[in-house]
Image (cartoon, rainbow, N blue to C red; front, side, top):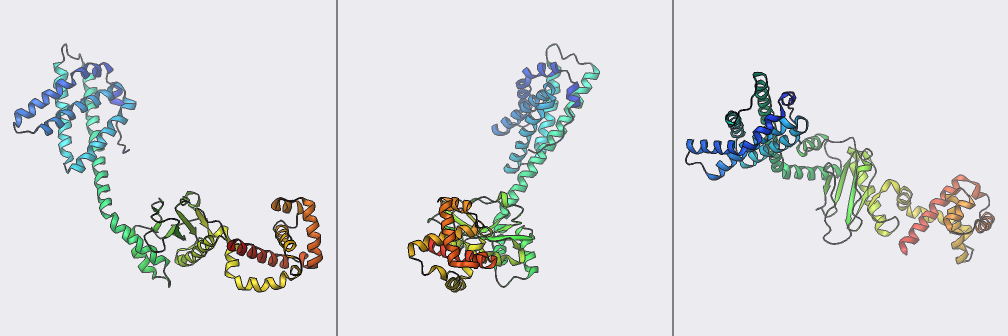
Length: 399
């Protein structure tokens, strides 16, 4: 809500019975103003006359609200006149007419006060307080109307330029993701036109529809996105800072893979990793659901890049298993990977494999017989772990 200060001290000093005595005569004051308008302009339309009468009645009632409750009354009053300012802008009317209506309301209110049977019995000091309160009220109301009027005009202007800004943002997105890298001066110019300050770091993302006609997910306004492209893509500014606020893509309709955070000039590098991550997810090598972050699947991505090298290394590093019967080889292979992942802790590996720890220890002794000192070499163990991960991933993809 737009807030404009109101000095409530004058209202706090006005006796509350003034409002109670004035409130029953609000309609009479509004009818008196309507009569004045018709005498001054017989051609006045019913709509305009009704609007003027309603404005006077609302103004006097709001004044009474503030006298009775200076602390809380202003919230209701300012909300009302904020809407008035917005409606004036939408209808193309000048706020001056509302200011004139406020002055007419004040004049009619004073005449009504004087005509109240028995009078209000205000002494000079009390009368001065009422006058002060009325001027404070009119000034604050005029400020709220002006604020509402300006806010509506600004939003209308924003709606008119929004399509052009969106076009600039789409162009900026593809320019940042393009190879070779775009001229920094051209990027800066387009970023200014797109109203998108170039961030220090970005993360690129690619999306894949799970079903035809999937509606693009709702995303924060500061993301660059083009879901209408043949390969829908996004660009996330300052991804490390906003990680917790990035919404997960609807798993039912979209899979979205996010590349690593990189300097803005290297957005295309992040895009390549996002493409590879989404491809692995499509093959079933990594989970294919919701938001998929490449940084959480580094081993799978590295292995995918080194597929041929992994196959050649496997022939040497896993050679001791080749002479083992297939069924037993399968069990030993799974156990070896679990042991490598858990630093040869049989208890942890048994929970991973869901077998008894003694079974793991028995298989470990067999593996030690097959591989010998290689199981005590950290470098060899790392190589075997990568190879076994690749084998498991390829087997899952094949299944």
